[in-house]
Structures are given as structure tokens and as C-alpha cells.
Length: 246
Image (cartoon, rainbow, N blue to C red; front, side):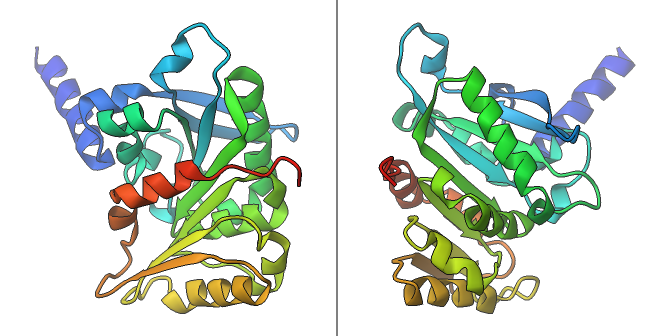
């Protein structure tokens, strides 16, 4: 009985730490992907309820990239921030989608794993009913940097992107200026300075793009909480559809 209670308490702490309720946590399922270069990538996958029903309907895919603090090998820590918003009942009903949340290994960075992430998306498309014209990428902090890098390397893959408190290479912005992008940052962020996001937005505009930019006043290195809980953000992202003619 003592062991059972200890296990339940530990499970409860994991849920509290991840920001997911027990019901929301059960909606994400753990998986492991191995790339063509034999790189292992653990990830959690949220599937739309309707995907279990027979039919030809396809659903959007959101690739969610966590921050540096959630790196590891437990395939759980990456659910700490943001992912709970996609698992809420009202969001799942209004915006049924797949959410893939991979976990970056300790000491690694998303910026150097873009190829593996692209392979993961391709593998998910093979095994799930994913709409190829509604694939989105978003990430926070280290994941924000990863979002910019994925856009630079594979712009034609994404219908929209939402980098949060990250930064990228302004010289590459012209390559994905046509992709709908909404950038977020806190103006008091001292971990990743908002100037990095501002530089990317300016570069996109100079390249002919029309990015959206929200800079939260008085907010430090936590611009993701307000972003993922904002219904307007969800409405915007799921309204975007890639021009398959590009």
C-alpha cells in the first residue's frame, strides 16, 4: 500500500509539473522515432478523437518544440509548458488536430536537429491522417530558435509558424517571408532578448512578408503562457492553410 501511494504521489507530481491534468495527460501517448541516421527521438502524440473513427477526413498537425529546461530522456518533461492548451476539451472539439511534442536530448539543441524533425513529420504523415496543407510549427525559447531554423530549412512544409521568445538568422528570412508567421516575446525578457524577435520581424517585412508580432509589456521569459492560452492565437493558427501550388 505504501509503495502504491508513493507511486500515485510521484505520478501526481509529474502531472502538476507538466501542467496537464490526469485526463489531459492520458490523451498524449509516448512514442520513439528513429531517423535514417539512426538518431533516436522520443515524442508524445496527441491525436484527434475523430481519427479513431472510419473515414477519409484528415487533420492538422502541430509540431511543438519545448525549451532548454525540458531536455532529457523521460519523454515527459516536454509536456510542461503549452501542450495542455491543445488537450483541453473545448480546443479539441473546435480544433481537432494531432500535436507531436518531441523531446530534445540532454545537451542537444533543436537548431541542429532540423533534419530529424522533418523526418519525424514525414513518418507521422505515413501513419496518421494528417492534412499536408495544415502542418504548423511552434516552439518556446530554445524551441523558438528551432522554429526559425525549421522555417529556414523547410519553408514549403509549413502552413504557419509561431516562434515564441526565440531568435533566428535575419539573412535567411527572405526564404520563408511568404509563410504566415506570428512572433511572440516579452519586452522584459533578459534570457532571450526581445531584440532577436524584433530583428526577425523587421527582416521578414523587408523581404516582403507580413508577420504578426506581439510583444507583451512587463513580461519576462514566459511569453508562452499568454500565447497558448489566447483563443485568438488558436483561431489564427488553425485558419492557415498552405498554398499547395507553391
